[in-house]
Length: 632
Image (tube, rainbow, N blue to C red; front, side, top):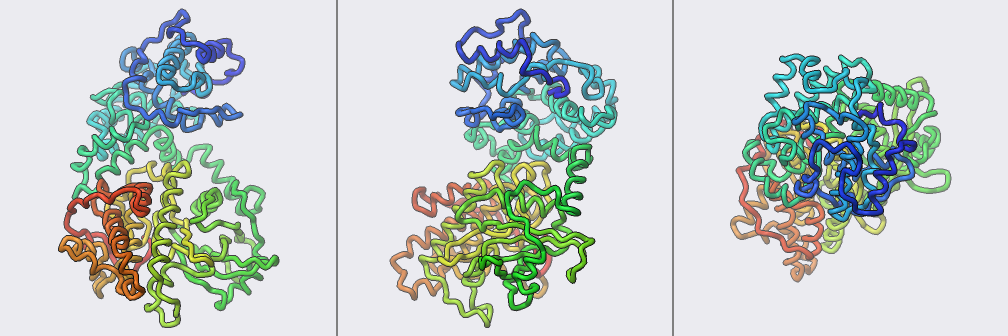
């Protein structure tokens, strides 16, 4: 905090005091100024220490301070600052010796948890917590805060952030009011470089002054301070959330969402809303990037010339047309080195502008997994480049998947020109496991996690060996983006959207789990997820159909009859287990759905499928608004 004051870390005479904590275990507060608050909470609050267990600083101090461990410790240290504000009415510590004393105490407690002894010195500059008038509208004390904002602005945030922030709706209301205060403070200050400090001060005020449960309550720690808590605590708190939304759909996902709120992503959301200086700079960079290619995303991918793609696809001829995906058409192309690729031409859309395109490029370029379609490169044609396709056009170049999409093979009878053989059970089983592995990588193998948001058969491609690969990341969101706002804009495909996402915009890992559950049912049952009547209402919903068969004790009737013809009766138990996993994944209650990692273990037989809880009535009539299976 107070980054403007944190400048001479490497030359600070006090740095060695913090560093020395790594070589011994002295009693805390060895200098003359005692820390005004106790750090005992470090040992008692249920924070998740896992990200700091094997901490290694980066060569760059900035990189280190933005690491997941340091961000967790900043949230943890924020409890002390909030408590100091509560007791002493000061947003920061009075002087540098006091700041060093507090960091010494903090590191001493971390030592007691067997964590690395250089955490405080690696993650923090003692100067950053020292009070100064030259930050955030010249606010130093609680009284300054009250004077600057006035009673009307303070009354709103006081009301919104006072109750239990474990409850999703309470947390959301508090976030919204906090963002409004943040906007006003930055406008008062007039210096956007102070926006970080105003952001921190807003959180400290909520945690230390407003919330009636205090800075060490689980709601304040998870919602305001974004301190990752142990998963068992999150499980114990699930009961709070079933009361928050209709039908109790959000369940366990609320604790996940709430934990993900806080420091980084309140700020991200505010940055987007207000277009402050550094966001405008980024936008300018993108504009320059689009116009002259001097600046490009750090993708590591090839940037193709349009002429090469035009030649590779024979001028995007109909003979080279493969299919239509989200946001664009896909064509087969042959590069000069004889490599076969798939070229996706992004069509103009309200849902994917330049920012979304560059996000997809950067996200997909960083993903390396055998069950994801790799990105070869991209191309952008500017407005002033004259060619027959008109204004600016964007292209993505992927590896070519010679066996097309899962949709082509799963429902060949729906296309008179498609004579592909029906998938065998071993092929279907392999495809399900491949997709599960791909999702586990997206949710657990990269940080921040990535939510695909559009898992469906047309976005599952099959390579020459019939191995499945997840494709089309045009709607993908990083977990940091999804938790930057409570109600994410709905995007996806009818029949595959999780109810809590379709109805309320609540996006979590469990949203992809629901979609994957529907795909499992389609693969094992050989039936489309959704059939609509002429009025646009669902006439058949596979999740309801399989559920009714399971409840009546006739789940075997849901199996695709062609699987039995192929002599797979001996595999029936496995097929039924896959069906149960699909039913569990597509459960209406979020709390009843497993994580992707648990799904994979159930499919592989390493984890028993639990008994499936009952569920509310179908929400089909509320979830579908038209007869097209298109993106919202």
